[in-house]
Image 1 (tube, rainbow, N blue to C red):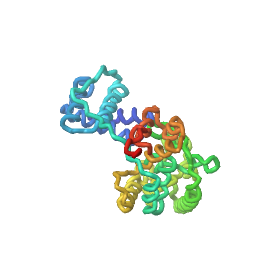
Image 2: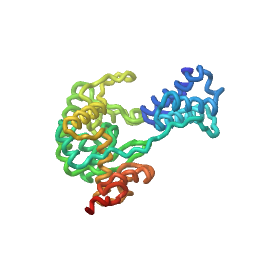
Image 3: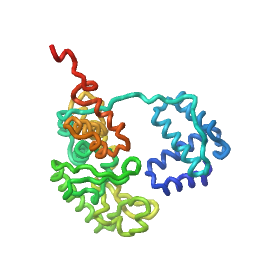
Image 4: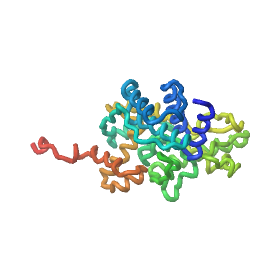
Length: 319
């Protein structure tokens, strides 16, 4: 990709306040698309070339349907938002098939067994995933100002789809979380004394509020153990704890617990939704807590309730 086109793509993405991960993914797909077609200028190509590229991903790359859809979204963004050109209907010859899979859901006993084998900050984060229905990155990116102990509420800022939402702050976790916050405040105060104490701010807030990056309210709830120097500003900052720390700790706890399920951190979010529905909560309420745009996404959890497949009682239960 020509450097100016790459810069234009990144600028367009940042102007629309997409996440850094989306930016990297979109630019990566644009690069792959151009390499696939021998670095022909993007302006000289269109629907046919995009269709060939998507077909190649499915037929030769054997990518998942979601991966193929992400590649398509990146190329549509390139043509519409960067090159100012609306494309027609794109139908690749080969579509990746989306397998119909049910989410992995843990029972309450299995959740207890896994959490019992976790320690420290990863255990608290895992408990929040299950207790509040957070995604892994949503939990890692929590800031102090997002916790409202008075209202027993967590505000998730810029979640999936760049949407904000509110979910519950479980009463059972409040004492441990308050103690954790006290320790984090001590770390922050020490950082300030040593000339550090800054965090990365979203979008252009650092220009609008130059001192906000060092304020307590903007600090990460789960900061990294090490500081780093920002390449652009030279500020000594802390990033939030990397999500892989939690993922590795959870995977190890599942193995040691003996739970015979392919459970990941995201299974705790699945379990949160399923257990709320089992307790009789309205599906619209669960949809709101999860931040799903469409209730049909939440409906999948009705298929894994404790009543059995589709709620049907097996005849063997009558014997």
